[in-house]
Amino acid sequence: MAKQAIIATPPKLTSSPRVDFLTPDFDALVWNKGYDVVYEKAIQCPCSMRTQNYQSSCMNCMGSGWIFINPVQTKAVLQSINRNTKYQQWSQEMLGTISVTMENRFQLSFMDKLRVIDSTIIYAENVLVRNFKGQLYAYTIYPIIDITECFLFIDVKSKLQFLINGVDFTFQENKILFNSSNIKEGSSISVRYIHNLQYNIIDINHDVRNSYLLDNRSREQQNLLPIGAIGRKSHYIIDALNVDGTNIYDNSQQTNNKNEYGQCFRNQ
Image (cartoon, rainbow, N blue to C red; front, top):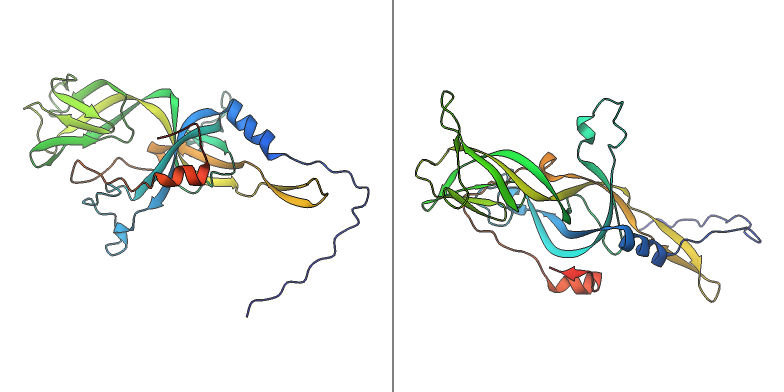
């Protein structure tokens, strides 16, 4: 049997001044001052339930352990947290960390993904070449806009071999496809590329931002305000896709975007 709570006696509120927060005003602030972002929900892949490890053959999470679904384009206010660092020691825990504010209709959760549409940045990483049915390929952490430099490691006594886009390799999203005869399965590649800023949610620091206001009949109504979260650049918290294959299943239920969020800036 459920426990029955005793309702506490409220203090005397007659003639007490009050300030009400209005959700439309907060939402307007987010919309007017926010960045254009693509927001995706995160769900943990169940492929690890039996093996206790994420499976490299899983075409749902691509071996990363996380599935991102139902992308929708909207607005978010983003602000760097590690900003007062001119005369302070840098903190590895704070690198690439931002505060995120979105409208309350977006119920942010751990590992949800935000991709900033109009902002790009350079990232460099090393990737390992794989072979699937005769196709040599490698995955990067971020979807690629353009590759600026790409080098093949030969051995410790040889100069790196510069690879030419369109000749030695092509790319699509976060997948690089190799054509050069010098590249073999297991080769190490160093790649520097342009991508959109991308963050994953690591904490919900304001998961409750509710207030009350009086309606036109002087009754208290709960008012849901924008929620706040902490995000971090994706490469600090998630590895590149690690799958034996070049295809991935899309588990998105696109019909839910409009029903759940209304008509946002643009559904993807």
